[in-house]
Length: 242
Image 1: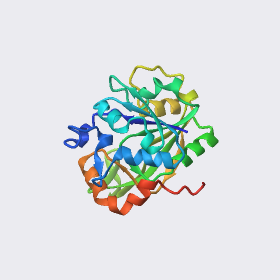
Image 2: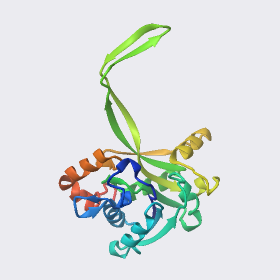
Image 3: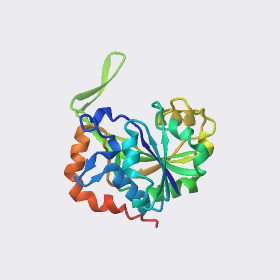
Image 4: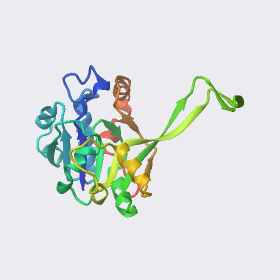
């Protein structure tokens, strides 16, 4: 079982925390980095090999993680010289990857069962499996629907439900072989192309804990909640199907 972790971004939205540290190494709960937690979870769920796609301040990540022995993992690295999006670095790695593998962002805190996601991806035969999460947004305005200059509906301060990508994916090599390495290629580019080809991705719906550490508010929330959630995060979720 092989996972590719995207750890090469500049973390601009999380400044000033990422001025001197790459985002995956910012501390959570004063003892662990995000990457500490993620690597421990992947090892717990049976992953043996990890590839870290590094870029900005990547040598700090390489120095901190080393060969992965501390987590019982075999870790190698891929250095990206420019920003290539989520899937761009993976295209350059295909020859080093098995037929089915996990891809995830390096700034995700969740107690998802990574192994179960990859198992379901394998069983489905899907070109891509996307972990999704239900979010709600409260609209602080009265929302009007209009047609031909006439108001036809009105809802006062509605709550909008929608599903978002968690930044965790089951991926197949055969899906990515048609794309050109060395140019920017994002998750959005992949999904839109698969939809255009009538080969839609599958969904892995998740309702546990998930937080994308993208902004200072998210980071502060993760630290505030850490004592309540650390048991699940540090040992990894118990997978219902295992």
